Image 1 (cartoon, rainbow, N blue to C red):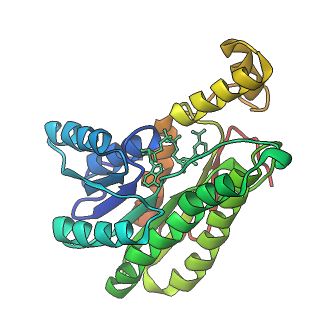
Image 2 (cartoon, rainbow, N blue to C red):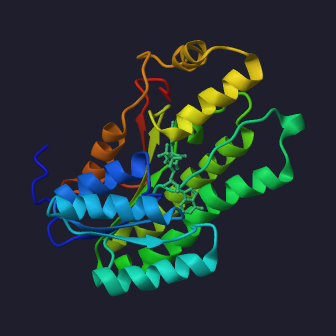
Length: 262
Ligand code: NAI
């Protein structure tokens, strides 16, 4: 797929843009010609991501945002519109994860995960998508997870939040279908980021396995016996933002090596 200039004149907000998948998505969209704004809680990280892209001659800015906080999302919408003029593309990438068996799953942690992964997606989409519909063009890409389509031990809160994110994706896709806006979910398996490193550390702490063994236990569930690279997620996100993808709406696109075949 040639992406050069494919998004020229477009503007994009990427949440959770400080590390991991977010910067890779921001880079792909910016390299395709979009002006991008990365938003997350970690101000130093997002400022560094935007500065690196600007150093490469691309259009990039950063803005602090906690997607779980309605006031913060409102400030993001205002700041993004001031900086970019309009927002054509929203990538709901901010997310958190943790694991626990049901009897140790606290309500506080359940609520924390729901607030970022599910409610954050709702708040940000509500802040940006209606204006896209008014202008007659827009793209919302929700970075969900394999856990949006299937379940596994010890990740009930995370999987529930990602199922909520995918259900929301399908509903807003239906609402926006005749307004020039598409809303889709990308569903990666384990990606090589800090989030997966943390999962490996948790497995090591709870089981006494070595790092290699803990990684091996994760890879054993993946058909391709490897972690997904952030660039693979960025590539699919970019594709969904393209003009040619205008017929793809309300979909959950798996990037899991064939782990989910439903
Ligand atoms: P990461 O932990 O490396 O980065 C997460 C980013 O989200 C950081 O920039 C962080 O500051 C930001 N963030 C967290 N809470 C936030 C909040 N309340 N408001 C604003 N920003 C916030 O995670 P990674 O791996 O890059 O994950 C990105 C997305 O991809 C998440 O939604 C995650 O659930 C999803 N995903 C990750 C997979 C993995 O194996 N790493 C697999 C499938 C999906």
